[in-house]
Each structure stands twice: as C-alpha cells, then as structure tokens.
Length: 295
Ligand SMILES: [Zn+2]
Image (cartoon, rainbow, N blue to C red; front, side):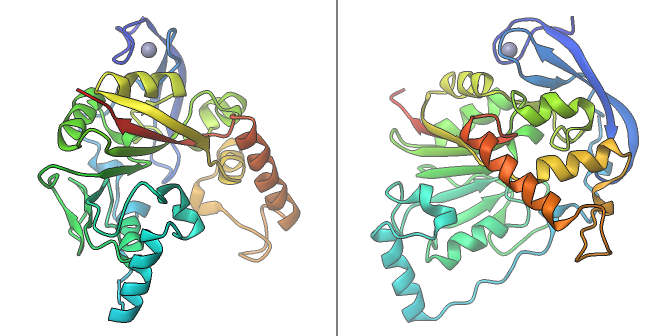
C-alpha cells in the first residue's frame, strides 16, 4: 500500500514501473493504482521536474501569429454568435458568445488560444506558470468571472489537483463551463501496452485518471458532468509500438518520412481502430465537459 488515494480515499497498490521514453532520459518511475476509482498515481515523482520539460517540449513551441482584418473579425464573431464554429471547436457552440471570458489553463505557449483568437474570441487568454512568455499567455488566473476554462492535456501534469479545481471553481460563475481533455487509465491501450503505453508518459504525467476519478474530483469542487466523449487517435498505437520496440518518439518514421517503420496501411488501420475504441468508450483519451453548479 502506498497511502490513500487523493481522490477517493481508498488504497493505492503499486501497479507498473516505466522509464521516461519521449526523450529517452530513462529512470524507473512507479505508478500505483487506486483499488476504488482506478486512477494511476506516480508514487515517486522527482522533486525537480524541470529536466523533463526540455526546450524542445511540444507545448513550448512558438505559437502561431494571429493576423486578421476588421471585416474578417466581424464575420468570425458572427459565426461564434450563430453557433457555426469550425468542427474542431464544435463542442463550444452554444456555450460561449464572442465576448465570453475564456481561459486555457496549462496553455503552453498558447497555440489553442491563438486558434480561439482567430475566431474573433478576443477575451481568450492562456495561463501557464511554466511556459515561456507568449503574446496571450500569462502566469496567473485573471480575476473572476471566467465563463469557460479549458484544460487540454494539462491536468495530468498537476500534482495538487483538488486545490487547482477548487481555485478554478472560485473563478467561475454558476453555469460556467470547464472542459478537461486527458489520457484515460481505463482504456484498451493502457491495458494492452502497460508500461509501454505512450500516454503514461512518466514522470510528466503525475496522475492518470479514469472517468470515475475525474468525475469525483470535479464534483468535490462543485462541478456537474454535462457530457463526455473519447477523442483518441492512432497515436496510442504507433507511439506505444515505438516504446514496445525500445525506441523514442523521435524515431517515428513513415514511408513518406525517412522510409518507414510503419506503412501507410498500418497507420490507416491505427486510426480506424482508434475510432472504434472511441465509439466503445475505450479510447485512451477523453473530453469531459463540466458545468459549475450551485455552491
Ligand atoms: Zn481512488
């Protein structure tokens, strides 16, 4: 036993040990699994995680520039108003208007915020305590109220999650929304690949949730789950296959790129399998939309 689960209070038992694989830094990091809610918890996180976020880390790439004419801006704001956002942002239709205050929490250098600003959403900002400064990224949360908070694969990097979600809930009005996208420990790929599962990602991922643990965490801070869906991709297969062969993500090769660890047919099959798993609620990552309910 490794102490009680920080989410549900039940026992956590050692489950699997894996090295850092994205950059090939090695080490041995052990995760425990909660016998109650199923979440995976990194039992021995390094005191200093900075060496595991080197300069080439994907979230810290320079953000794309946002340039827009006045008429274009007006047209785009109307698309937000009339619920005609692009498909990748379709889940936001009806939740926000052109003047909604939006925070992408754990934004990195702000590529998602730049995407929102291109839609005319001028009040979208990123918050990231660790990323290099970007044009729309700040270190601290703006003052309340925040209508919509998004967390795109950032929650799993946070150690004291109950404190963070409490703080977010204090910044949101009743009826405000919170979207969390995160890897999921109850997925086919997590079970099939174990320590080679590409989204385990030790030691950066400190907590890997299940839908049960995530819901419990958010309900404790006054949120209600509105809906959820899986959005996994072929990455769960080609990434995990690389790790299973002792390679790193930098070794990814296709016939079109360096002549081929994976054929085009294989990559296509990986995407098709991901779509099947998503439909069966077994893909290795998901989106969870919560609403701030009455205090
Ligand atoms: Zn638990």
